[in-house]
Length: 297
Length: 339
Image 1 (cartoon, rainbow over the protein chains, first blue to last red):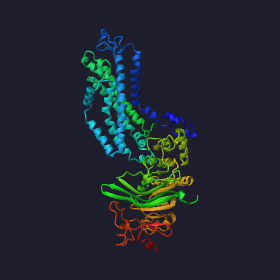
Image 2: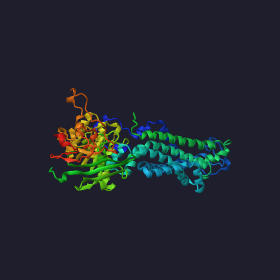
Image 3: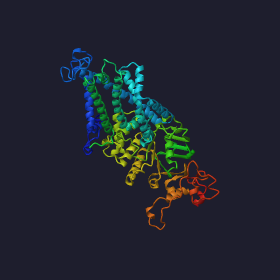
């Protein structure tokens, strides 16, 4: 944002104008969103850099150290039923959960925005066909669809990500379709066409940016939803397979020790909650920041 | 410049536009012919629904595709290379290159015809870059020049402004800058001053006239404001129910309108110099524009006309007559009325 403005040399008239109302400026004013962004940053850094900084391996089994509670010895966050270090496992699990959540969101966004934009802009037979297809896919109960597909396909990070994306794009498509259908009737869309813009240009440069608020909200909700879905599926045993940790399958392993070693469930649960809430806050902030009509004072 | 066939920028012949609606086929526009020379301003005047805007959209080929809407006749536009382009039969990709480059359009509502989430600068540079192979920085410079040209102060700072940060008049100037960015030979202005207050209207009209003198472009000015017509037009085309009912140079038309509809239009303009006279109420043309799906038989204007003669006006559809002083009028009785 700020790089383009710096291309222009300052002139005396600059002083008369109010400071530029950039997206970053507006975002910074949103406290919760800044907090959410900071937490996500910490989670991401912790997951990716953390494992190199601690002396334990996430799959190293130390049978003598089973069920060590947090803050009680060498293992800061304790150990699990096989004596594996919880902190190391949470970090490695974070890599998987965050990557699955984020990638699934990206894929579902690309599919959803494309389908929704094409259906909304062209309407007619094409639009109806696409949207009826969306409705049809939407009719499947997500969890069962996911489980059924997961039973057929080899579970792994890539396949789980794709599966989650395949069940999450329809909402986005519906949101985008409605927005684009309304926006394409607006004068500026006709004006752009009158100035020689192509369909693709009008859809993706003129219309979609106007729908960015609901799209960003849907995107952050989708990250949160994808993390939860991955947890569900792993929790039910069809997702990421042990010994590879994810927050979801750690929760799954923890259920039988819920009374004797509650930290095994509380820690991954806490991180899932933290990540999901942070993404939602971030979405709120982004929605406001990306709308230039929101003035910052 | 010497008058010759090379001076004709736009030639419209027997343009007809039909829409298919739930209530059946309707002829929105029929038998519209005119031509436009370099530097000329043609005003299209008429009530709402008379087919002015539809005609202009057809010239840019912005109407819905067949079968919803069928356009026939011929529209020939001078291309940048000097040859005439047959607008109605160009493939869509060629047409895209023509729009904005050879013929451009300014819309009525400056509030809504700019994209609210893009800066003014981005919108102008993108328009330039749609048609010209130009780097971002060069396009920025060009945008500054254009904003300067249309009289926006502190043009360089305005590049990063969003539409909502500008006033209505400024937005319309920015819209004009966008429309002019590729120096079109024909500019269609669809009621560009209707949404603005009167002082700004005058400024925008001044601006258009000045730009026209500088670039020699031809302007089609769509309006229902006859004051604006007198101000800006060289020639006037009066439309009623999708047909041209009178076409003449601006001075003779205002001095002696031939068609009863034009007379009615001119009479219904509020005039300060007549205010307070005993004539009292402002005269209006009685009745409404006919439903295009069920046009009245004969002359479309006859149910509202003061000179209506039964058995003639409601039976025979008048043709477009050309008078001795090269005016066009569509009325069976114009010579009797004028006498």
